[in-house]
Image (cartoon, rainbow, N blue to C red; front, side, top):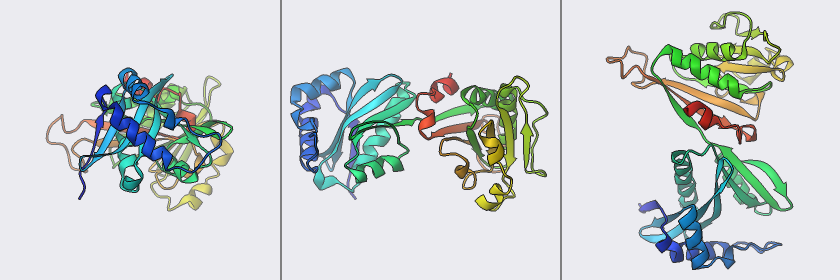
Length: 313
């Protein structure tokens, strides 16, 4: 098995990074207008690394991939994402992107972005599979983006309600939240917080026996549609609820919705709730009973919405 290692590049690595960029882009098909990547020099790469940073990937000690960072608003941008042809299809690009996203989260960014060429469909498929969506297009140049996930600790039940209220502050009509997690993880408690944040009418309780409930707003804002998909077998059964009549004017929260409710919207928030110790048995210590929520934004809607900033505060 090969030893694949990704590290943050230093200015002294500029010649190695430049060489990787040149090898990768020289092997690409001719494009019009051509890429400027081959104009990169050791000095230009070193300057970017010194200001914003970059990554260098080695496979068995040999430089195999690289990228440079830039900053665009609330996003950490990736530039010159490069893999030496000999090392393609060996996980180098995925490793670079994974580390880049970790660094963006550590630096406090909400989003990731990059530019890609529409003439390279395989490249677009790669980014799509990693959750990147088209934001804008200028000729053949596409701007792709992704809102980063965030993990929130929930030591007390009130923390789950507060997270729900914070999620409500991010939401607008048409938004869909899909809640996952084992029994007792706090899905309904979180939904109560969403309802409180939206100022809806009626007590938010588990809708297991009626499957769905509509809670109108008391302030003229979006209603809350609360769905329990635990007993639903597939998307067809969800369609039978006729949620399309409400979803555009409401915030829809679907418990147990993974694999069923994604068709409600291309843009959604997946919230996975879990107890730290896992399983359904009672925790042995209070520390083990701490719950966590991982909020994963899906779709271009959440780029620029400051999901990480809002929920991590």
